[in-house]
Length: 394
Image 1 (cartoon, helix red, strand yellow):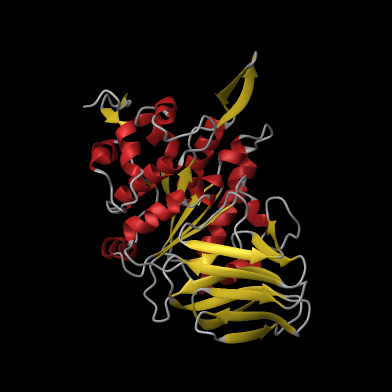
Image 2: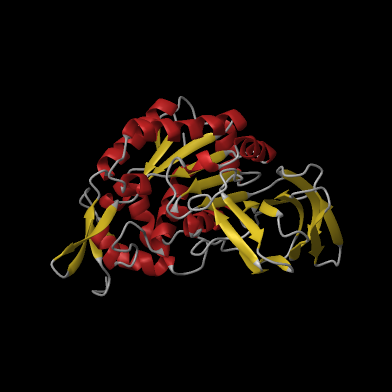
């Protein structure tokens, strides 16, 4: 093997060529590189604490048909690197499912391009109000004219459901699609969230006709059903209780509109960074989110992602160093405890990183940053491992 490649030894005593794996992952091909197959095979995978994996979920994963995966989480999800990799590994053609109306800074959906004018983004982590839709992002006009143009990489005909709120029942939005169809939308009820369905040819543009209208997102699905979807609904800095700022009646309705076969929940990094971390409160709030998901989608399976090594920046003399958060291990144990109590699936990103050489080796292979975050190819490697494990669910 070339000496330019980093050979990394995991806790199992197996050497993994992390640098060559990282270089291979930089290729845009939606396939698992040969260099990483031994790593995926020999490291521990998804732990199941539920009595039985749904036969329907296993069949959908193997057939890669009519499979809906909804991913909720923090900054590990917000960049869409993990979700988009999983999307492309699972499907040749896919729909988008639920989308944010606009993506905040450092957030994205890789398969979509947004353009906008005179819209601001409200984020449930940092902004009021406390009645956000599922995912926790709202787009609000700052002045008229205001518009959002949404362009998928591959233009498509699709059923679109617009989530919006208007102050009155007058004209609130104008929708124009690439087939030159135009629709004027008004609210049936003033000052309440509602969802309107229409058939559109993409790209589309959404124009605000009232400065007080709020956009809560949209669903893009296939007209004839048979949707293949991996949604990505992450917010930078989110903790496990962020959902408490979402409108429960609305987000329960949203989950029922498009039920997911699998929920992937990725919280814990930001919880662990707080000095006042309270395990019982963490388990209570995170557990209630799981309960709400199961109430809305009783046939779903839930996979909890435990975070990568949670480190925080400190100074040592003039040097900046990163040390593990004092609550990192407590949080990881709490997530495991929650997975057992709620009978979910569990995958530890930290265990996977440690078994494949450790955080420092991931950094030297350009798979991880010095802080809590991974680099794009690191998230791709996590997605490859999840894909490998999902195909082997028993």
